[in-house]
Every structure is written in C-alpha cells, then in structure tokens.
Image 1 (cartoon, one colour):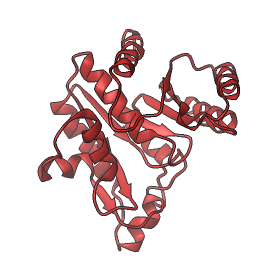
Image 2 (cartoon, rainbow, N blue to C red):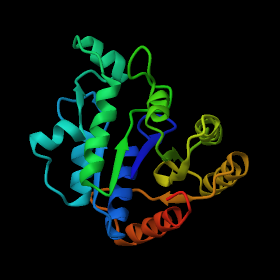
Image 3 (cartoon, rainbow, N blue to C red):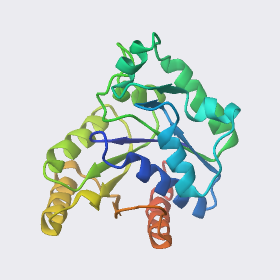
Image 4 (cartoon, one colour):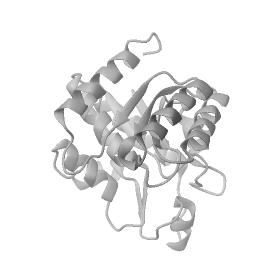
Length: 229
C-alpha cells in the first residue's frame, strides 16, 4: 500500500506526521518505509533523516536513499524552481517508479510531498497532479491556527473533486494558541468537508510518545478495516 502525505501549506508538520504514521503502521505489524518525494532547501535529505530519527532507524544506505529521496536541491523554493536553478528537471515518471519499487519490498510506503497541493514539481505537474497520477490514498496535515478552516476545507475538497481517497486528517495542535478556537475550527472542518477520520497531533520534540503511537495505530486500524483496503 502506498499513502501520500500532503498538507495545507509548508512548515505545518508533514514530516512529523509522516513519522508518527510510520511508527503506528509498524505497531500494527506492517513493514513500513517513508519517502521524501523532493527535498529542497538542503544539501542532505533533512526530512527523511528526521523520519529515521523519530523512528529510531539508521540512515538509509545510498542504494536505498536513491529511492527514498530521489531529488535533493539546495535552494529553498518549490521543487520546479529549485531544480531549475541547478539546471535540472524533475522526472515525475521516475518518481512514480521509485514508489513501485519500494512497494515491492514493503507493506506500506508513506511518501511525503512538498508544501501544499499546487506546489509545482515541473512546469506541467503540481503535487496535486502527481497524486492524481499515482492514485493513492492521501493523508492531509493541517495546522490548528487561524485560517485553517479555509485552507483545510479547500485542500480536502480539491482531493475529493478528482476522486482521490482521503484516508484521514492529521490536525497539528502544535500551532494552537487558543484551545477553544482550535476545537471549534476542527468541528467546522469536519462539517464543511465531511472528513471523519481525524488524528490530533501534539507538539513532538525528540521522540514520539508511546501514547501517541497507540492512538495513531487505532486511527489507522479503523482506516484499514474499511472495504477499500
């Protein structure tokens, strides 16, 4: 099974959410691997390294890294822009192929995108287009802060409009400054977007709490119990 992890914006906790999902799938007895589709703003696979650190796993060897982080660009920008500055162009069919190869050796592949849905991978493909190309279930990460209702509902509805399956919403409480507003916003998101499966993410620092892994495993078990899976 391949799952895509996208978000309503950049810097909202997709990397932490991906690590939590990986730990939870492992707790359910699944052999799981994470992928960072394209890393920008770095010279090493920073997001993937955080996945491995939080999961207590070693750094990927070069032959695996070629699949788990196919592109790394130094400039902090959308993948298309960062690639162009280095005289490169991202091959979306190659990205699709890396997922197929990983799926052969793992029960679950979690691929983390870059930014939100309309971030350009190439001149012709956005993240949104790539998800549509691979047609896999999607986890959406959103931040519990002012403005989240609009951003989250638009993201969820956009995915559904293309017939993409939203497996669940991970609502990041790290940004919550007002508990009442955070909970009221979540209630509005559920009502307006019709999302049922929601996992609340607390602030995560150096490790993922065992209680969160247990809660996330329950969240995933409900998803996997559906006929689609």
